[in-house]
Image (cartoon, rainbow, N blue to C red; front, side, top):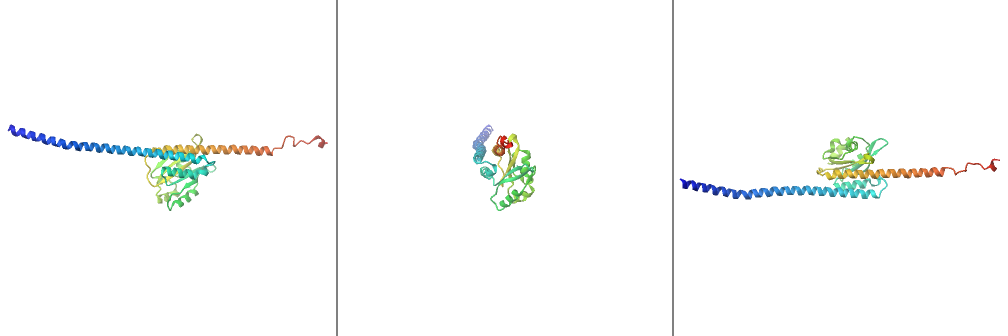
Length: 254
């Protein structure tokens, strides 16, 4: 009996050891697989961060270069939109500016999407006079925040909703162009069909770009006012009579 029990115990021990030997490689393989998956995920995140930083640097550098050789924003507005779309991979973009006389936003530039409907969207945008808090641009102008959405059609301007939907332009990034002390001057709105990646570099970069463009507009408005004032002073000086010109000589007054 004892011999049989001993034999049975030995058999169970051998079987347990065999199972342990088989399970160890499987457990090790699972650990390696989990570690590899975590590594790939971390690598992808780092790659996304690096790509976002590269896009941000490219956009900021391109904007600075575009503004450097201009005197007025309308001269380079289209170039600004081209730089932004190429750096951040957007299909279409609009540069809205505030008209101080009627308090509405109007488009000073538009980058057309490369589709058959792109020209119809551009025609509609250029004809719009958008009230504040209306559409994406009006809302961003009032709230003064970077707007990122993968489904912006719900708040798009009614005249543009069906056109944007037909063109597949659902994803939007919009930000304010701000001047002195954060006063909003306009809005740049970009659209594309693909969802936006969760990349905070875009939000921080466009915020800085909005400030740079706003500073450029403010500086050139001040420069224009300065030169206008100088011209007014020159015209006033040339129109004034010379001292003594209106004095009648005594020999003629006799």
